[in-house]
Length: 338
Image (cartoon, rainbow, N blue to C red; front, side):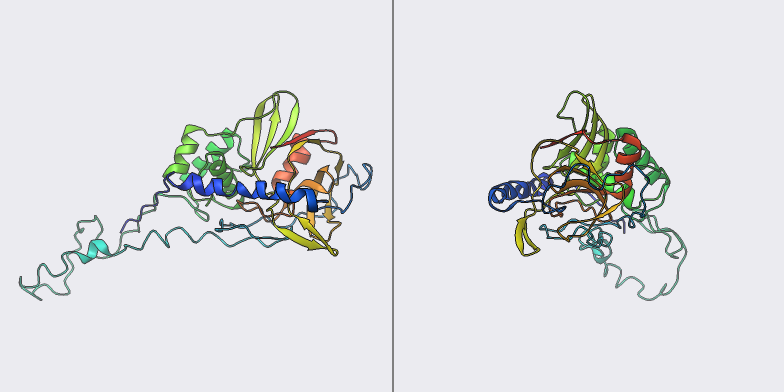
């Protein structure tokens, strides 16, 4: 039986909007508890640990697929990535077998058993051969793990729109999932990484977030939609999936902090071109660029579709490499968080 995956936009936007409450809650707690989110416990000198040499340590493995839970959870900066999304198919197939159930006894009195066990190989009313030799029909949606020409077409479209995709290899892996997350966030859709009707329509329509700045080279961080935008003179040149502070309180070195990412206008004041250990012992950060206190944009092996950090802004390791090696964002680069 053909299973159709249809993610409509009704009720979906509200789920995504629900995530935005986290930033507001964190803002209330900030006045009393915020020192620094995931880096040092005090603002380090601007010249400390800065280097322009190539990274001396390799980045950790990129994340495997990470489904969105119903509520945000506190997590370390090095939390393990989640397993591939299991929501697809599990709730879609609850009615499976309905088509086969009706009419099951229609021919009970018509030559019962006369043709029992026979198979003439003719297709049934669903177009499938009774001999079971036909391939199962491909689902209407695209999800993690698929390798096909249509995945390559999706990757090319995302790349053309500016979403962070480095390779059009026709394989739906972690990098493609990150780009799909970003597209779904930009379109206000459910963030499950599954390309159903609504997500495909967003790609076809060319949904891309708009920049909030109009001049210069700026790293914009959209807290509400959990996105990082590389912007040049008002034009978005790259859209990157991100995960910021989850609004939870946590303990570190005997003190209580709030996992909050502050909004405002800042600038990169310190950058560390290697794996960097948090001063609050909250985990490692790949090639961080600090823009206020101990808060940085940094690479991580785990970048879910929802707020999950201690205050820093996580992007994938490959996206952080792009920011360093291709786009630049040296010290002094404006960082606007909204």
